[in-house]
Length: 206
Image (cartoon, rainbow, N blue to C red; front, side, top):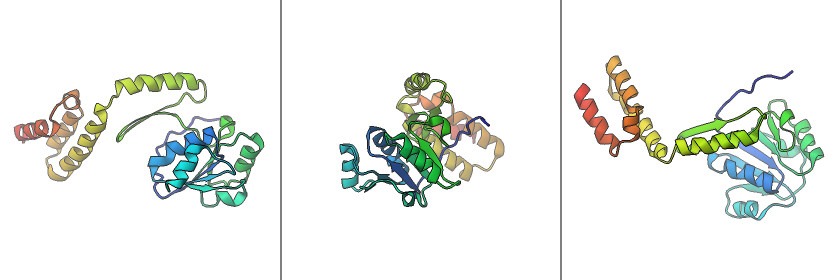
């Protein structure tokens, strides 16, 4: 039985994430996990130079061994990223029902997949075609990267801190709504001094 995918953003801080495999595919998975706060564990007899450097720098754990069922214990996410189809399938078969597994060579039978992704600080945009065309997903990501440029990183930080201040300091509901709507406008995105512009707007409306 097939169904629609359920989009979700996961907080992985302190969670155990296991990557089975040490090649280029596994390396890309590891790189994508580095800034999530997850405990990343690579299980593979061999590993790329980049994976080895990350291990030497203390950023990941590398278990230099062949895969066994014990490696999956307590893992929140599991990436089966070897170049051996049978090993990837055995990873999926040995995982617990509560564990989510993705197989590099079998997306249709995986529990999840990684969408094309644009990150601008707090702004995160994911694009998926449901397997119809990864090429189109990459093209859409490239378009979004141009549309949502580097300005958005500082802008999202401004929105976060200013929203927290409004929610805490502004009691009148209609003024609160007006301010929250105003800071999400293009005027503030393009502002050269957002804090000063917000102070002037608040003084004007308060």
